[in-house]
Image (cartoon, rainbow, N blue to C red; front, side, top):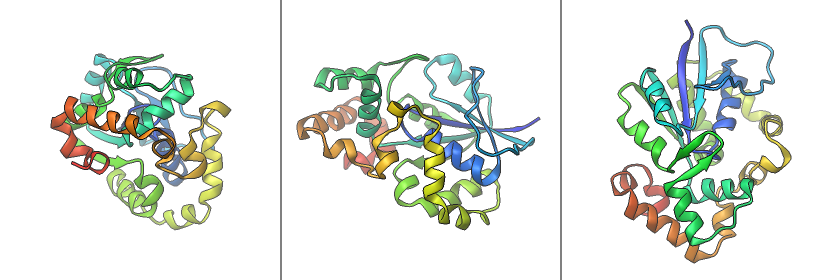
Length: 228
């Protein structure tokens, strides 16, 4: 039986990019937790001893499936960036009301969730787990890859070669998206793209709402964004 590693993230938080990296460096493919879904692969050889199981945890039964596993990776991205990127993909108008609704009651094709739900699952998970911030996959890339290698119990010898050819890998990974689905960060490596392009009052509203709504997670997981 393959050893499973759950890859959990809110939509538009970098799970496709991390799945591609793991596939490229260690030939570990990614499949869906519930649906018959497999991330498109660019590498012919797939391991028969390990698999990444990716999900966004929109439904309670997905959480129960995650809790049956022994290994969990969570990706957290700046809430403003992930939410506004999701708005762009869905052509949603950005208002105070739409931001609040998105934080509390995200509606996707897979179901309903709130922004902090994956963090709740990670916080209560009793197994072996690793927390990754999306920004570190862009700004502290080398160190983050070494953390992933250690967690997966894999060699880090291929990391230097991967980094030397990083532009090619970025282009390849973006082929997993439709033209309209590619986020601005993936194209420009600007982790504050939406924050810099959004009215400051909307930015403040987003962060203040998170602080008030989820105080138990703000300091522990979101301080780098919320200035706790």
